[in-house]
Image (tube, rainbow, N blue to C red; front, side, top):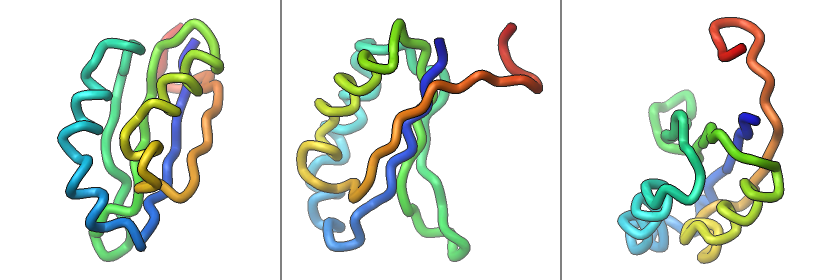
Length: 94
């Protein structure tokens, strides 16, 4: 199944973002889940305002566990995190 994590940044945690950025990237590249796509989301001014991860997982619980161990989640860099099952219908997998 494909799962999507949409995370919105906490504007009060800019310093923590810089501190944990490399740890966050290592976590995403760890192979814990099969990431299909990942990257920042930008606001209307071109500033990073969060991130999206699309991953091939066995269950939403697997994605929740992966997300919970992300340094950006652990250290409050993200103010909100939402995880959804995604079923692409156009241009996606069958």
